[in-house]
Amino acid sequence: MKRLFALPLVLLAGLLACASPHTLPQPSSEVVQAEIRKAIDGFSEASIRGDLPGVLAKFDDQADILLIGSDKGEVYKGRAAMEVWLGSLYKSNGFGWQMDRIDISHNGDTAWAFVEGKMNVSNKVTGKLRFRAPYRFSVVFVRRSNNWVLRLFHGSAPGKE
Image 1 (spheres, rainbow, N blue to C red):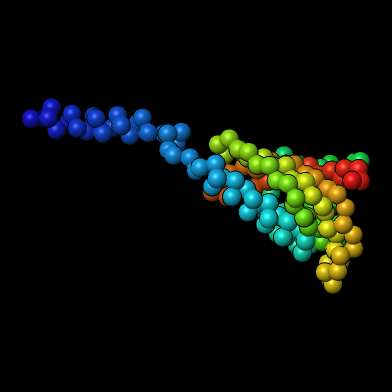
Image 2 (image 1 turned 135 degrees about the vertical axis):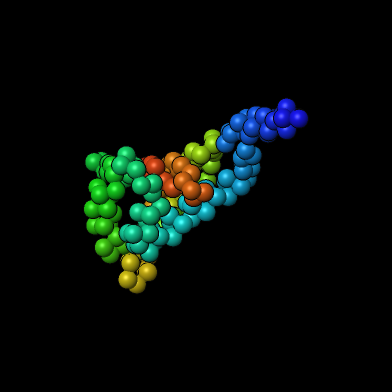
């Protein structure tokens, strides 16, 4: 009698042991792409407002996050370095993007995107456009607690069209 009762328990334990996070269904590519697009839009919206805490919240909390601007020497590793540089930029400016092209790809909990279009620099107080220039950026995201956060932002200003 003990054997009959133990057999279903052993089978159940075996099934549970075989179930791992890797066998759980992953979101579809369309879902991930929509999530990444939403994360890019959220980053842009915070940036155009010059919302430093909002922009920093879009990044992972790891020490090795990296922000690379489009000018020589603009390489900032870690939140503290990013905060100093972005704080100086956002004092009187907001930065947003007209995104004409967005390519997104992903693998598990890592995603990356290439965005090309125009960078719009505006007066933070009045919202008035100061200038618009060709701009592109590449970003790498990681999933943390069902949110996509930036690990790398690399911007560049290509030659004039």
